[in-house]
View 1 (tube, rainbow, N blue to C red):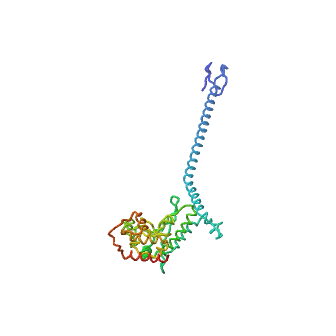
View 2 (cartoon, rainbow, N blue to C red):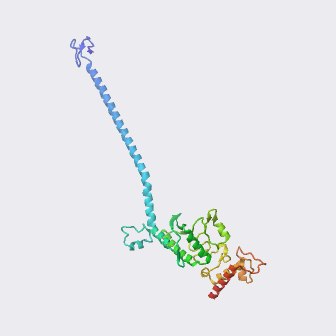
View 3 (cartoon, one colour):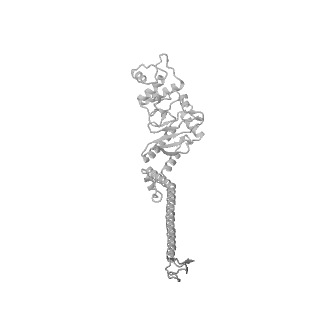
Amino acid sequence: MAYCTKCGGNLEQGAIFCTNCGEKTSIPEVTNQVETRSENRNLHESNYKNKYSRLKGILISIAVLIILAVAIYLVYPKLTNKNKHSQHVSNHVQNNDNEQEAAGDSANNPPNTQTIPSYKAQLEQLKIYAGSRSLSVGSWDITQIDGVIHLTANNISPQNLQSIFNLYDSGNISPIRNWAIKVANIADEVAMSKNTSWYIYVGDQCVAQYPQTLSSDDLMYYSGSCGVSIPVLEGNSKSDLAIVIHTMVYGKMSTTNEFILPMSNIRKLTQDDLDYLTKDELSYARNEIYARHGYIFKTVKMRNYFLAKTWYSPNVNYNGTLSQIETYNVKLIKDREALLN
């Protein structure tokens, strides 16, 4: 209820003048204050809604950014690996796509997709032929480590591994050498396609099989608590690719410890071991059998040659006797020298 400020009479709701004294009332001012408060409240609510909308928008934006970041984190590595794999395969076959094009399917099957498997299949098709038997070294792996192509086969069956070592012990190196040359040729192709070098290792790790003709020092070097690990074939170039440690695939025998034929004192040589040697090399190889015992040579040429070897130690008490294997090897070398005269 409102009252007139002049006469104290009752004022009706919304009256502008007092009906008793005619005095102008102040109710509209009250009404305006109410309206002002209402407007302020509405403005406050509007501001609150605007702030809430902005905050909501910010939170939604942050959530979207988080989702995008997670998606990129999960997907990007896969895309990168895929691109790297595509580049790896593409580079690998730059020199081998002619074969794929000849097959007439390069449009549907890119020529780089089967390159490594095809080389692996070629390696696994190679066999060591010993008479009527064909010996396999099992599955191959081709990998690239620090830029070098590694061609490895280390899952040879015990029977085949022993048969390969038996060939070596008997001096029948030709089947192993012929196989090794084919392996090296494939290694060249793989390495050329990547414009890099290669490393070949064939042999089982920690097994019971080993060549009986290897020296005790060799066996000790390649042995362990689990067995022995004599490589059938190992090397990182054609110049040092060796069969069972010492027998070189290309050229003469290994010059390990400065010997031309480092095993001529413990294993019977074969004609294959001598085919790659010159006439002078044959002469030195024959005399180094004696030099191992400290034989003192009469000719200046031989004396100077062996005095330059770190392993040679003259022995005035040596009487020139040889073992049965050494005697056999001396005669075999002499016979080969006679053919070259």
